[in-house]
Length: 243
Image (tube, rainbow, N blue to C red; front, side, top):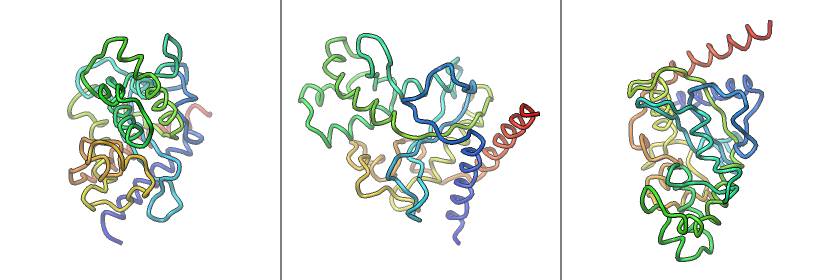
């Protein structure tokens, strides 16, 4: 077994332990802010039909965190940006300009569906958009929310302060680099039917991930030790709480 494969298997073994700790994965569409979220953490999204090279186990398609610079952002803040809106004047929509995850999924849906030219011309343009543009984009935002909302995901509590050297950043960057299939460097490539193969960013299409940062980097396998450290801490807290 080569080194990359061994580390990848170890990573998925840790994710399996994390899933048992949480009692299973969650789906974002069913989540809300009153659930038991840690203040800070790293999240891992999976996708139905996307499997590892063994054809059995699900593969991770997106890794992310939040607030690596000075910030009051929480894990749920970031997840809720990806989920989209619940109420308001455009319920079920969202703001892809505030979530790069939503933006990339939207470009893939644009390439695979029959959408108006007005949406095609404005999607991903600018960091803000007037209300009339957002209303035109609303049908696609709805589709993005439905797509992301159906994805199972796990999260690891890593409650260290915001910093470029944060352990959350170490886990995020290491996991993305390890998982990436960019230029054939990975092991678990995307399926031929993965909608991400139609995203407008070649780096998404080639890596098999809804990520851009870190997909071209060599993985620093030390992130697995950091991951395991926080997993053990979380397990110990659960065990103490059960007594």
